[in-house]
Image 1: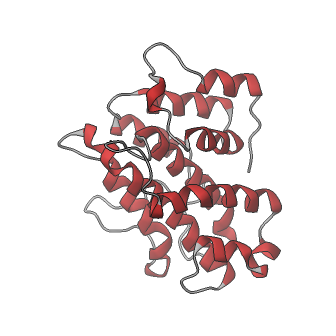
Image 2 (image 1 turned 30 degrees about the horizontal axis):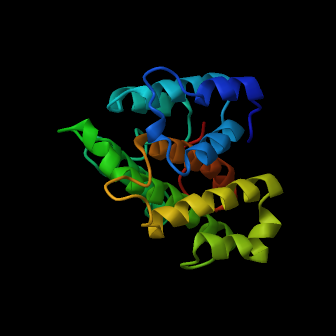
Length: 218
């Protein structure tokens, strides 16, 4: 699952550059880049940086890169007429990815994406939460409760469990935290893109354990 990236490469990817204002460094940005580094190789991380550096977000470039990663993604979970390309029994797993696509694609004004960044992070977390419920045979467990259950600990490797647990704090903030400064956003567009990609990668690990009827095999 994890793809090694040298610390120097990661530093070069995430450090400040002219034109990138530090005031947009949000509470969870560093954690999200650290998780991304665990799941993507150097070339993928560089491409990810190009995607998030586009202001406003270029949805077409984003979707094109998303598709190159393989697996379930925004361009293949939904058909051309808006219907889901998955078995009905897998709806709770893939529907959150459809919502991510909807929040990212603000056709009238892509600058609006920043107002939906929190929603994207929440849907990215729900994708993982739904998968854990499938893996453990639960109904309606929160992500945290599912992670603590012995049936999940027995089936998921320690590294994946640790990464999901780190993502859990970000997901919970998207659901509950409202303590950020007035007239600011808790999550940036960059955060939402990273959360989506991390969720996708974690999902690829969990799909084989979840008894899925749908396959978006790489």
